Amino acid sequence: MPGAPTPAPAPAPNIVFNANPTSITAGQSVLFTWSTSNVRAVYFYHDGQNWQDHGVAGVGQSTEFPPNTMNYYLRVINTDNSVTVKTRTINVTQPVGAPVINRFSVDPAAITLGQCVNMVWQVSGQVNTVQLIVNTVGVWPNAPISGSFQDCPATPGQSTYSIQAVGPGGTSQQQVTVNVNALAPQPATATPVPPGPPAPTINGFTLAPSTIASGGCTIVSWTTGGGASRIVLLRDNAPILDNAPQNSSVQDCPPIPSGAAMPLNMVYTLQAYNSAGQMVTQSQTLIVQ
Image (cartoon, rainbow, N blue to C red):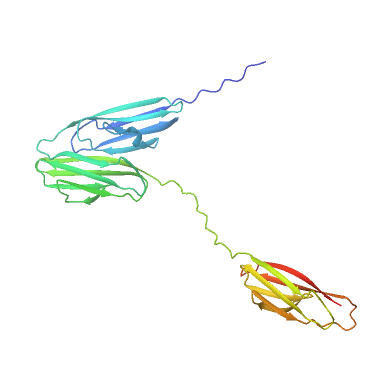
């Protein structure tokens, strides 16, 4: 028998990662671009960052402001779960006399929509102005040389946080990107159904006596419970009491139809309803001699 066909090998991954320029003066920007195909996941990050927090699309770009000489990485998880890491080193020259950004941190590095990040900074040297920028919008144009600021992104994706310090010797700038994850869909909550009224019950229903002579009378007695709210008493399917008390007794002297054969059986029926229209019923037979 011919052998089973050999499965076709998985397509080879295609990874391109560029940085322009690779040598700058602190405060200048670098444009990183990447393009991948036939891969499982992509992460873009730099020295000091956890790669797990910085997942990106397979094709994209990012403008960064490296504060000093450092490495940027494109980490690719291939379809066979092997890992490819490409590195670009950016050489940074510090401007003479420009302000020094000693610290600029944005925590946490990844959040879920509805959460907030906290920016903390400290600048030294000859400083004229400090500005905080969120996604190209100046949110604090004349910030102090040290402080903190909270931001709560309104949309998922990436939020870019920058600090720009300007002095007589030049400009210094740093930038941090935070991944903002969308909220996980929540299961629909069933609308609770309000409980209905309790079912009606008939606790007792009697005729005393249960045998009478023609023209005689009987005492009809009953007790009800549960959700009983309407009581109806019938004789031979004809109502003789409607909206009767829930617990009561009544004397009834049934008329005898002319020419009726004796003995005559007459059926008394008690119906108990609740407010939802549920009904229970009991019957007793009266014998007329």
